[in-house]
Amino acid sequence: MSKKKILITGGAGFIGGNFVQYMVEKYPQYDIYNLDLLTYAGDLTKHQDIEKKGNYHFVKLDIADREAIMELFEKEKFDFVTHFAAESHVDRSITEPEIFVRTNVLGTQVLLDAAKRIGVKKFVHVSTDEVYGELDFDPKTFFTEETPLEPNSPYSASKASSDLLVRAYHETFGLPVNITRCSNNYGPYHFPEKLIPLTISRVLNDQTVPVYGNGKNIRDWLHVLDHCKAIDLVMHDGVNGEVYNIGGHNERTNLEVVRTIISTLEKSEVLIEFVNDRLGHDKRYAIDPTKLEKLGWKPEFNFETGIAQTIQWYLDNKEWWEQIISGEYKGYFEKQYTMK
Ligand code: NAD
Ligand code: DAU
Image (cartoon, rainbow, N blue to C red; front, side, top):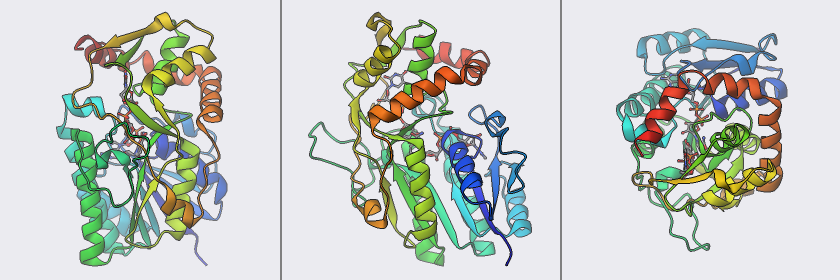
């Protein structure tokens, strides 16, 4: 029997990168294809250890390049597609929305067409809880799979648009799809523009940490490995056409997150700097993961164990994030935070 072929888009980024490593190790019997354009958010140094493995392959391509994507799918005849590639940072979508529409909407549609043409067995679309909009601060309210889509940022609007296309390809063409909507991830290889790695890297360098508004906005944090396990489960056992929310009930205010990192690193809270709020800043996200738990998923990390592991990883892997923050990221940081 021939080996199953799994295409992972965005496998040079944070979550896709962790998923590639998890899959290459767990399934030597599968051929894993990592397709990535290597934008500012993608890097392959993280895959040095798996590059020598026979079941790992890399393809540099733009998901919105229709001709090249069609050609690749015709040639490789993938069995499964897990689609992570996206523009993912809310702040960048506020200053430059257009690329979000191109990559997240058009790119997804191109992949759907290609998946339909070759008849893949499953297309898992990795989406986000942000498509549901925001919750108020009542701790008894959660996003379920039935919560209406009310995206507030250009990023979440582009992700919601792609979700609707995925749904439509299932309803119209019978494409076997799942949509997953996960809460905020953290863990190894998280790009230092996002709150947790930004805080860890800046605190380690004794630099101030910009906290938007009053720091009381709430996010529901999930360790990236628990997200990877959920995608693996959905890819194999998800019921076609279904949406699955992913989250582990780890709600924290942004200020709590920043304070936890500062105290773990034994630094002072004078590093906290309150800056102008993000435009349209969603108040609170919180996931009800009951449906996925019924499918057989259980997270391994809670926030305490996950954040401790993550801080240690950033201490042990300074060369990875130092090489990022000393490059073009410097210009991004100055532009983003002097505008505030
Ligand atoms: P990321 O920004 O770290 O990585 C995105 C990857 O996609 C990069 O490697 C980049 O090079 C690649 N990419 C971008 N444009 C491309 C294109 N046109 N063609 C091919 N590759 C391209 O993102 P992430 O945080 O790892 O998020 C991955 C996915 O998970 C996204 O779809 C995001 O919406 C979703 N998600 C993220 C989170 C989170 O907390 N980070 C939570 C829920 C869902
Ligand atoms: O909920 C899932 C989403 O989580 C994903 O879909 C996105 O791709 C991912 O980037 C993330 O979005 P957020 O906007 O929630 O993540 P971010 O790390 O940018 O911000 C987390 C919170 O911290 C948010 O309330 C804004 C705040 N923040 C962020 C930055 C970068 C600050 O206070 N200061 C900052 O400098």
